[in-house]
Image 1 (cartoon, one colour):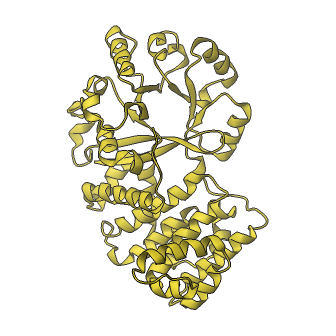
Image 2 (spheres, one colour):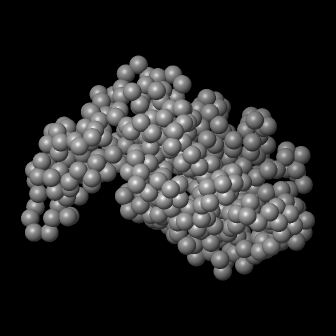
Image 3 (tube, helix red, strand yellow):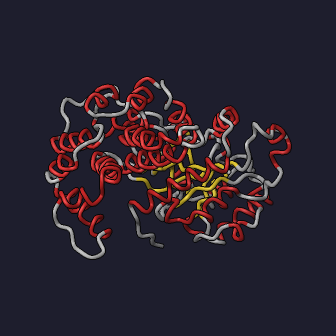
Length: 411
């Protein structure tokens, strides 16, 4: 099994939902799955297996999850496969589900069971023929490049007033900014938050300069704990967080000294904590998904070390994942950002030039995030990687992030 999450944003860059995309088998190892055999077991919604096994807290922090269904799986016993609240699941249909009576009947049944419904890949010419299905839908995903949003706003507000419009394939920040300025869409999906910064901001926020100083202290070879403690002491939020963590570790006495706390953690754990805590702070004025993305990337990269025969390089791969969006965090180009921080040579080569020993890991993670299962499967075959280990590496990263930043799930 392979699975990944793709976020859906609102016009304030807040993540409102995630789409779950999964693949059960490696099609490169089983080429018959590219033919008629791909419909074997089509009555099972593999994404629901992922949702049910992971739970809403770990998967999406309680936000809605969009789960793809096709012309076969739409007739599956979805209620038996799904162990999370139906109102948190949006069944994402495509144009393989046609407006024929048996599909219309099934869609209405699912709506009655409490599931939300969405549809994608529907050309404008099909809006009217799909009227009975669209009347049941909560969302429609539209390719913004092929839609006149001004006309769409008028049409949907009159004919389907309860349906929310989602712009997909939003690939750049410029496209996103243009779309939100015009209005009309409720949600947006695309890779724009992963786009590199091409023009740098003139200055870095003074507080971020302090964070960069701290990163450079702990990422230097054999750093001094006292130096790290002195820099931590400049930021009250980091001090409080550090003392809370260490006091949970100290069973018999309360620790109030920053230097005592850093000594208690030791070099390895202090370095890990600072890299994650500071990365979160560097993302504070950026979309929340940026912090989530790099945190999960960091742990996913570390977990993949064994699969890439780099078991001894897990810590360096962790740093690569954390810094994979440092250009966005700092508002600098990647070259300018990496010139400001101390990073291992292989990390810099991968992030700046897509070169060196770590570049294949970074490339693999990005393909995985995009649910590019064909390429992911090809890379697993070439690298003799075990699919189950890769899947568990991703799940483990999600669990780690959940435990690092726990949320309260409501509804």
